[in-house]
Length: 184
Figure 1 (tube, rainbow, N blue to C red):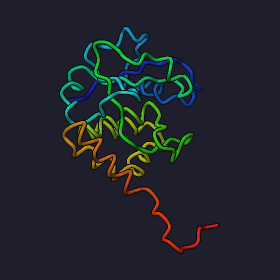
Figure 2 (figure 1 turned 90 degrees about the horizontal axis):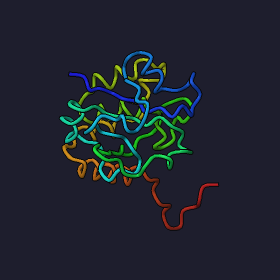
Figure 3 (figure 1 turned 180 degrees about the horizontal axis):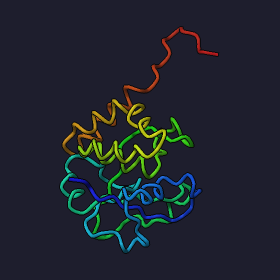
Figure 4 (figure 1 turned 180 degrees about the vertical axis):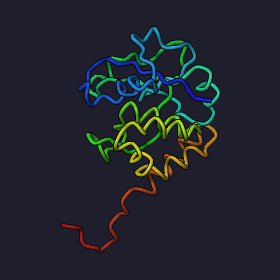
């Protein structure tokens, strides 16, 4: 069973680099012309959602689909903070693998966000198929291998957030030992 993917495209990025448009071109996602056309009950990925995407969203995603908002990070505040009739979800900490923002935390493209969401919910084959259209697509799974696996094993949003917190603490650089020289 494949999850229906949707792109709400504000047409703010370079059409040649727009991952959302590429997914639409290859019939891997359907474009939505306005926020009012988002399917009722769908999962909408937003950075300010109170819940993280998790396996508990699997049935909703299978029935209603997942929506990525394709717009510039500079304009994210133009999207309403609360949307009626949908399930807003955020992605846990992941690192971008796209050529523009490679290695930057939380700066995923729409395609990366959709693929990560699918992976976390257990639709791993569809996640990889989504990224297969990009020369750098497999890089998303390579650079985020450990957190994606951990998040995909969590059953609830609360577990995903706990794993994220633990992962971020483990990844922080160690404090210098007392008396040790600071690097120059």
